[in-house]
Length: 234
Image 1: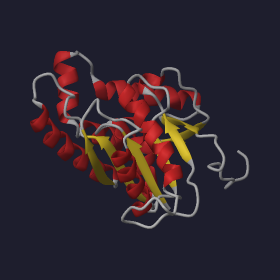
Image 2 (image 1 turned 180 degrees about the horizontal axis):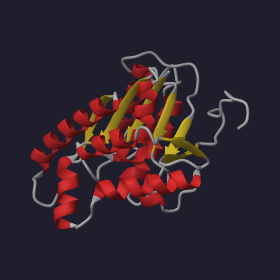
Image 3 (image 1 turned 90 degrees about the horizontal axis):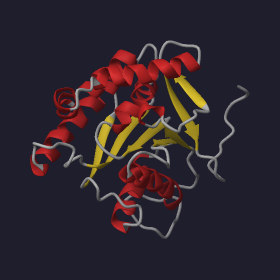
């Protein structure tokens, strides 16, 4: 199976579903992590051009830790818009090229517009990738892919319907998050937030809910024809 994470900024996928992606990779599945934005304004002191390069390199290191391959669409922060055809076509090509069987992305309602627009883009391309007369470099696909929304930051306004036990993968996930040194260091020194502890705490809470040590929570995108019956209950 091929798994495609579609996140907004470098580090979003690591935070929201890094343990699950690592679990897929360890099981022998191919995993791609596509970042729509380049993270170029995610700092108050490092200037955008320099930060863009730093965060791209951090994302590539983090993907390797998780056993995944990083892809960047290189859209500037605060410029992610689902209505921009060039970005939608580029993401459509990513889905077609990777041959993904499963998409994981942001929840439609989140704390910032970039995340919500990234979620809308992921849902859009799960449809547009099937359109024969929408031409990109790779051929169109013939079936709709299931889409799952990952947890919001701190789990605010998010009730999971699916849980993945990442007790074995939690340290690997935190190592990947820690690859984003420009963000982790900035939050620790200037916002006085230990972000690694923040992420660990959120996953421990989801673990408490699902009767394991650490877990990640998800919700399925319930829209025809993305619902694929692949298992018996539960």
